[in-house]
Structures are given as structure tokens and as C-alpha cells.
Length: 50
Image 1: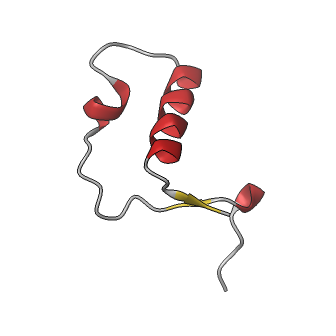
Image 2: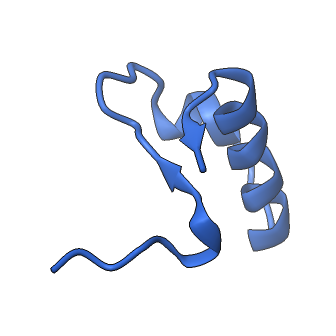
């Protein structure tokens, strides 16, 4: 049995070529900045589905 995703969102990264450095940059960032940058990528590439 597969559980429904929390909040109803699913994100698919299959076939993506970006590295973590591409997404988050080279410097140190806080967890909240990491989350914001990740959502920018998800939304701009239309990776999420509800």
C-alpha cells in the first residue's frame, strides 16, 4: 500500500541533470534558504503535481 504524500504534493526528479551545487550554490546556506531554493527549482521546472 502506498501512502498519500503529506500535503498532497508529489515531486518527481527523474531525468533531471542539475547537481546540488547548481541548485544550492557553492556557499553555506541555512535549511530555510535550502527549502526556498528547492521550491524555486520545483516550481520553475514544473516538477510538482497535486
